[in-house]
Image (tube, rainbow, N blue to C red):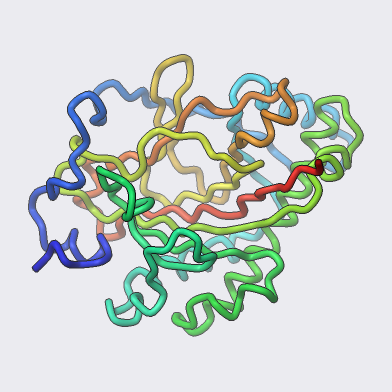
Length: 304
């Protein structure tokens, strides 16, 4: 029976209606006609001269984005287009693996550091979310990489390189955010002590009735900072001035999301009110389902 399938990927291809356990209450359903579409929905910051003569201008842009939005996009970030495309390819290939191969990585235990699962927490939630995800802890790499999927064959090596490069970007951004707030460059790093890191590959299969459910409902991230890579299928929305705004993908850019930990420790920084991966009707027509690689969440332990 379809209802017994552990992963949405294997269920979604066989249904013409959203199963009842995915249907949100009427008051909590997406209102797709209310979503604003804008070419400039988030600040786009060019990091090309972050360590050059225009550093002060870039820091001002970062400060404004942190104080007013809690979200911004970055380009010329130092991570190659080839590496980005390779990570997206790996993610696609993983979710296209045969069911038996994917399920080698499955667990419904939220405490398991490296696992493939579905929705958010299948043991406690009343309404399921329309997504599967592969969650990987990736710092220190040597402690976790042996638990990562071994298929596709290059997954561990290539994903490890990607995680390392993105971690470097995050540490540079934390220095820039510190300096943009008028603090010493290493202030955030020293204040928040050790930085963990995890990566989640979120996969949103085509949905037959996207007006009834979400990839994930509106939420904030509890960590310090998130770097988000979208593929070419739109779906991400952010709440700005009380309105949901669609964030259209821009090739070779990352979205930077300031998490709750940053706001708690530095109140002048705005934590985004809400964001959500929505399931646009167009996704039914796509050969490549909506897929985001969400990575490098730096969860910090604050010293006593």
